[in-house]
Each structure stands twice: as structure tokens, then as C-alpha cells.
Length: 483
Image (cartoon, rainbow, N blue to C red; front, side, top):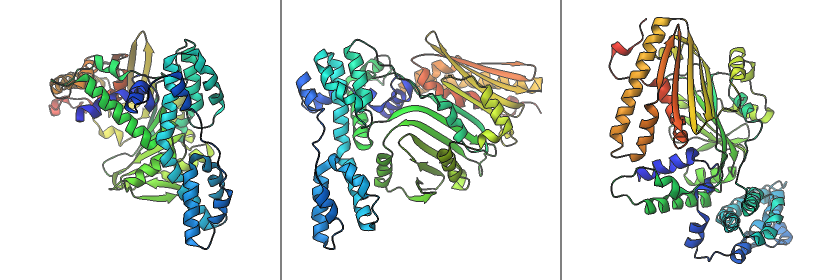
């Protein structure tokens, strides 16, 4: 099971597809549903539910008779998604009873409809896979639909039928998301999501080392089942970028880490999932904040575009309100910090991964960072490879040289440890291969770390970065930079 989870995460981190459903096979889905594949059968799946007149039952939601209210709720629920527009309006009613019931019915209908929404998207995907031009007339009306992902998938299906490849683009203003981070951050960066379309899990497994006796077909089926189960529970999810920040005072008992994910998803579905897990929540500035047991993390789903995770020791430094204010005004306070504004603006745009930091007294407590003033991570994709470059600027040549030696020794040790781990976690082979490319050089008081990965490893590059920043052998004082 652990190998299954690791494989699934590896696929979803960035094997090409940006959507959760990119890793689900339409043909396998319809085979499980026992539906024969044809233009006719798939076209039938596209038909939206017929409109329903629920004006009468809506009025009865305010009835003083509880049985009348129950019967009205039942009739509205049976109308399904056709009732949602009217319910959204009723949810804003001045009557607390009507508003509460409408909101409850919305959650109930949306929860019941998620598997049907996924079914419709898989039908659109399959029509594209069949590549029959007669399906275009059924797909074109979907280009005007507002239901999440429907218009996008219809366009992609038509392109596939016409012989074009699926290519998605990032939002033009993703870089601005970094300014939503709190003003206290002194290390910030961003990861861009992939822009590809559907990915074959079977093809990915072809080159992935497996445990002895493992069956690739069974593993692929398990991955597909996991993906579809998740999608039918919370809906499809698209990942575009992840902006991250670390406060300058981070330590064992202070500071915070912030992750701001951007994309497209159903915020209410994720909130409902947290409620089903009985995760405690409260409200901050009108937004629901989920805090798992322990209170050191906070999860927010403020819109269908953003999801936020904040972590802090003992949960005492969670800058929730500051982030919400930044989201509402699109003017965070980090931009007002001169040193961070300069570093961020100097980082080249369009990189798949970048990060910058100014070394604070708290950061300098790490021996590997103590000799430096600023840090910068850059990446470049070219010729089938992703090149990573980590630069540290300082003034002490001796300390910089000691750090370089420590990183090189640590990377070699990490690669050897990962090779040993391949026996029980075969997927670790790609980590070991990446770590072998790590090189650190020191010139004057500066240090530069580089690493190279081919495209098949690029998803794991994100996991490699923390190793580059902290890798050093467990050898004791000899590896510590001289003071």
C-alpha cells in the first residue's frame, strides 16, 4: 500500500497532466461501468438534466408545518442539479429557516451530483479519444457551459478529434500570488504546475521499478480506482501553481510556513470532505478555517481558485487574517518589504520553480546557511532536462568552501542511502539518480549548487530542493563550517 501511495503521488506531482482526471483512463472507467463505447452511448451521457419548477416547494420551506417542510425538501432534492440556481437564491433569503434549509439542500445535491459530473467529463474525454468527427456537433454546445471543466474538456475533445494535441496554459498573473504571502516571510518561491493533458498511467508504470512479484496491471488498476474514488468524492482538481513562504523567525517554537495553491476545484466539496473527517473548524473574517487535531495547521478553501495551508509550532503564529485580507484586496503587505521586493523582482519570470530568501538570524542557526546573506534558486527546462541552480551570496570564503564540501558529501551519502531504499521502495531509484547530479562549488564567499534531471524525473525535483538546502553527512563536528 505504501508503494501504491508513493507511486500515485509521483504521478500527480507532475508527470504531465494538470488535472486529477488526467490520470484516469476513460475506457477503463466505462468498462467498470459496463457501458459499451460508441458515439451514441457517450453522446447520451452529455444530456443535462431537464429544468424543474420548484417554486412551490421553495415557498413551503417557510411553512410552520414541519411535515410540509420535510416533503418540500424531499421534492427539491429529487430535482437535483436543476434546483441549484433557485436554491442559491433561496440561501440568501431573509428567513433564517429558508436560508439554512436551502444551504443544506445545496450541499446534499452537490454531493450526490459529483459522481454524475465526473461521469459527464469522462464521456467528453472518451468522445475525444474516439476521434469521430460526427461527435463535434454534440460537443460544440458544451463550449458555452458554465459547469466547471465542461467547456475546457469539450474544447480539448474537439481539438483531439481534429488531430491537435492538448495544451493548457498558465494564468498570466500567477507570479502575483507571491505577494499574497504574509509580510513576515523572508523565504518565498513558486512552483508552476504542468500544462499537459491526459497521461497514461500504464505508460508511466512501464519504466517505473517495482517490488519483486508486483503486477503492473494490478497496480495501474489500483491507481485508477484511487483517482476515480477521490474525484467522485471531491470533484476534479486542476493544479496551476504553488506559492510558498517561510517566516523569518521560524524555529522550533515560533514562525510559520504558508502554502497557497492555485488552480480550479470545488471548494465546498473539500470543505464537506473535512467535515466528514470530523475536522474541527472555526470562522476567521467570515471564512471557515479547518484545524486538524493538534492545532499546528490551518486549512482554508476561500474560493474555487485558491486553497491555503498554514503551519506553525503550537499554532500560535498563524497569519490567517493577513492572508485573507491580501486575497480580498489583491494587495498583500510582502510587497512593502524592500529587501524581499528586490529579490522577487530579480528572479526571472516563467521558471518552473524558483525561490529567494534573505538569511535572517533564525535561518543562520543552520550551519549550512550561516555564512550567507541571500539565497536564490532558479530552474530551466531545456533539451529534455530540468536544470536547477541554487546560489548563496556571502563574504567568508573559508566558510563557503566548508559548506560546499558538506553539501557534496551529503548529496553522495543521500544517493547511497536512497539506493539501499530501492529494495523496499523501488520508486526511490529516481531520487538516487537525481541526487548523483548534485554539485556544489565555492568561489570567494559565494556557493553554487547545481543539479540536473531528465523529464521523467522532473516531478521529483520539487522534493530534491529541500535536500539541496540541508544535505550534509551525519559525521559530526568535522562537517560543520568553521567559525
